[in-house]
Image: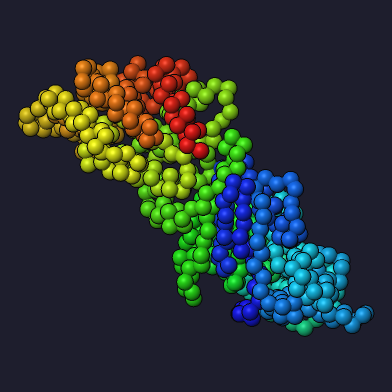
Length: 580
């Protein structure tokens, strides 16, 4: 459909209570993200209320202090513009006047054209706001929004299912999208007074009424969409009320509600790809899958360049509403990096803070320690994520912080053993190499002076002995792999430091190490002062690292963390709280 008629309607500017100004793209999507209970749904409701009552005010308010509407064209031009968008005016036979569609399932005959044009010219949108703003709320999707009762066709269609009944093109398009998601087409029985969407196909062509007994029986055998599960109905409701009846402003609260992750992702793609232009889509979501779908769909548009995308992260930490606009490229970079994407790093957008660890086991252990350290205090709404090793910790933390997400990094003490990576981390996380260079050199000199060089023949002998325990073509066990890795590291002085932590150092090396621990903690990088994860519970042997955590939890050591571990955990949460 082409809507280039010199007429437009949309939100030009949205001012939030913390002073943040959001300018939704005139033909694109604005996505509000943030932790649960941050107020995303409330923000959308305030926005819609202000739009309906424009230029009125809203009291009391929490998020929105004002909006600026962008409106172009005259009232008469607007009527033709709405017709092009599927809102056809019809003449009422009882009084001879022209009416636009009323609200969905309303018994009213609609909005008189002359009145609608006058309201538009006066910028008062009360009785025509449903033609300009289509708002979809989570609780509505549990209701039956797909069926329409008897419809007098002299009245303009108000329900999107009525539009499907009238338009074979829209019906076919909607059915194809639904079939891509659920594997079944959508049918409409045009031989009954009530319009109800059904799942499947009759396998026969519709004929002029009356229908044959075979066709009636075929329709009767198809299940009704309204009687299906929450996910299928929710998905269909959003498609119906956004794509079939395209208002210039579409507001959707939590589109992922009731959907499985693949469906949420597909829905994001649909809204990015198939929403007619020009159109503003404004969404509140806490789904990384939906957001991934939006970015993928936007990037794969074939007929035009990607639509503009505005991302806003909101938070209500300490009952103070704050907002931050994000660069879509920053979020896309996370999603386009396979290791970060499949580690679910982007889920940090929907929490108050992220604790970033080297491995999954570290996440489990530190989550348990922070739970105990918290005691009866309120939950901090943190998520524990890992990047499978030290090398990517600072890079992932930088990307999360660029998205406005408070992020703490937990790393074993040998994070400091590679100067190149230390410099990279400092550059990415706001530190300066010259401020720590002397202490890093001091620590490296101590590590190098304590090297115990094992002859190559001895290392070979140890590794061969480990491998010889494996019979035939069997693969090495995880324990054997860890033993071989430890053997190769035996000539490295950092092995001793990692095994003992600060307690194994004395004199100037200890002072250098302590200063480094404190310096990096101020950057949000928490170096394990006891050396490495397994050193927190020395009562369990760390020889079999893969089994260490299992025993910690099975034997209940996580319930009684040491004073040093409690202090370490509290320092992490304090940093994240002050970063909000």
